[in-house]
Length: 395
Image (tube, rainbow, N blue to C red; front, side):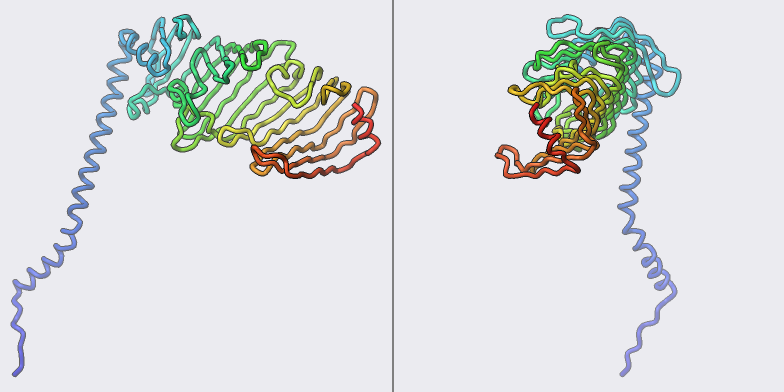
């Protein structure tokens, strides 16, 4: 007996084919629904941001003088000190709203002016809408009189604002806000540096130009300034740093990067007031160029190019001063977990009594883990004149 399958009608075949075609599409239906919802949410959010931006541009800024007190309150909250604004005037002529502030004053804890800014130009950043915090695309300040001070505990204050951070891993509100701004510029300003920790005389700089640019994790700065005549000529300093991903923006003690400085002519007698040296340096004039490499806020490599003349130094308290007519070369000091290395490259000098050290390279390294005594080391030199070393060593 043979089994014969039942005949398939045309309607049954059509239904099966429809079911086969419909099944794959039905599996993607939830994903298409989710995609439509997400697109709707994105469109709604961007529409709200656009409305808010247009309201700020066309509704608030034309009447910004009426918003002066709320702006003072928000700025005071962001900086952590009282802020007073003399006048506000809209300067915006494009898509990015901007305005100009006159006679901006920051008050200290005693309600005394800590910083007076004659003119401030501010361009608001669109990121303000996303962060719900006042952010600027650019802050331009003309003629600022800036006071920077380090107290006896090492805390750094800029115009009365604490930029030292409450503790490692947690920056202050003022420094966090400052390093969140896209660009900060000071033109034609004056800067006064007071170091109470070193008990040094205040240093006043004129014609100061400062540019600070901040990104998501990157921070860059440039400083050009003219020191007092007895210090030397106009100098410049730059820096490029990167912060950890989850660190506070203002926690500069955890940054890594490089800082450069170029002093075309400097009197090291004045410089020693603000720099710790491993020897006593009482005279010396010339050019200095150096850079420091930082890792997590700690200096790891220091490099200095020098071309000095009329140098008078004392290497130890119980030795006679060593008078050097000229000295040139590069000094490199490096600190690692394994130890310390000091190198002199293309180093040469001539003493006041015509003793000349031939140009060459020398390296001194010793193994010493932090907190432990030295366990050994090595010294190497390209060339050594033992008789000449004996003459110099007697100094």
